[in-house]
Image (tube, rainbow, N blue to C red; front, side, top):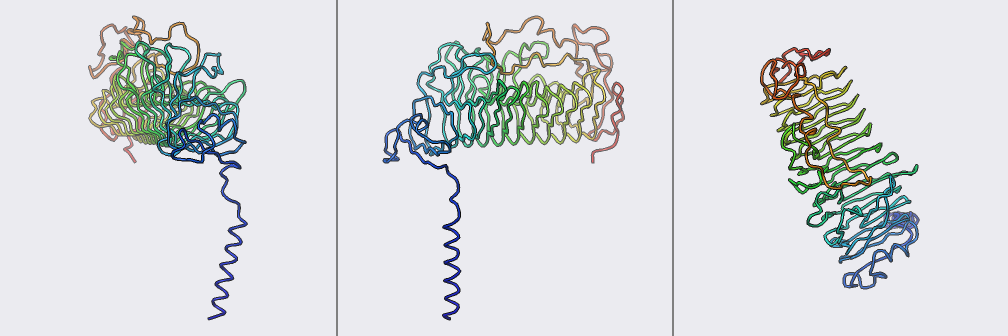
Length: 465
C-alpha cells in the first residue's frame, strides 16, 4: 500500500512540475483593462479604449468591460481587443481619420487598423448610430484594415449609414479591408453580424489584400432607392474565400426589369478578382445572389433563393467552376454563364425562367450533370452584353456625383432583345434586333436526358451521377 501510494504521489508531483514548466498560453505580454464607469471592472486602469491602446506594448491584450465607449479608435501595433458581452463602441460625431490608399478619398472609421499585423478584435459591438456625418464625405466605415493584418471575430457591426437625404451616397460599410503602395492586408472575418449598413456589409479591395470571410451573417437594409448594396465584396485584384455565410436582403428597388436597371444589388460580389472561392453560403433576396466577374474562381455548395430580375448565380469570366449548388427561385435564370472554358456541373435548379442561360459566343464551356425542376427551358444561349458595367461595387474613388444614378435610356436598352422567355423558336421581344435571339433549345428533363447542341458545344445526355 505504501509503495502504491508513493508511486501515485511521485506521478502527481511530476505532472505538477511539468505543468509549471509549460508556458502559459500566449495572451500577450501585457493585460490592460478598460471600463467606462469602473462599475463592472473597478480596478480597470483606463476608461477609454484609445488610452489603453496608446499605453499597450506590442502583443498586449486589452479587455474592454461592459459599457458604452463614445470614441474612434486607431491601432498601429499588434494587440488584441477582447470585449465582454455588452461592450459597445459608439462614436459621437465621427471625424476623418484616414484616406483611401487608392486615391486619397477621406475616410472615417470607428476602428482603424493600419500599418501593422496580428491585431485581433473580438466580442465588441461597433455601432454607427451616432456617427453625425452630414454629407457624402468622409466615407463612413465600422472597422477598416489598411495595409494591416489580423482577425475580426464575434463582433456586431450595425448602423453605418447616413441621415435623411444622403441615402444615395456611396458610403456606410461595416468592414473594409484595403491594400496599397505595395502593402499587404491579410484579414480573417468570422462569426460576426453586420447589418443596417448603407453601401456594403464587407468590402475587400485591391492587390495585396487577402481575406477569409466565413461564418458571418450579413443583412442588407432591404428595398432601397439609395446606394445599390452588396453584402460581401472581394474586388479589384484582391483575393480570398467567402464561405459558410448567410447573406440576404440587398435589394435595389429601381431595378425591376432586365431592360430597366442602371445598377443592380448583389449579396455576394467578386469583381475584377481571380481565383476567389465562394463556397457553402446561403444567399437570398437580391437582384443577383452570387455574381463572379473574374477568372478561375470556384462557386460550390451554395444555396441561393428569391432572386429578382436576374440570376441565382451569375458568372462572367473564364475557367470558373460552378458545381454542387442549389438554386431556388431564379428570375431570368438559375445560373448565367458568360465566358470561356467554364465548368458547370452537378447543380440543382428549382424554378426559373431558364435553368442555365449561357451567353452566345462563349466557347469551351462544359455544362453537364445538372438537374432542373419546375423550369420550362433547361438550357438556352442568347446574346447578352453582360452586367459587369451595371453592378455597383464599392471602390474608393472620388466622384463628382455620389448619388446612385437614375436609369438612363442607354441602361434601359442595354439588355433589350437578349432574352427569349419561353416564347418558342424565333421568339423576339419588343425592340430586339434581328439575329440576336438564340434558337430555344429543346426541353431537357431533370437529368439532362435530352441531347442538345448549343453553339459549338455538346451538352451530354448522361444522367446525373
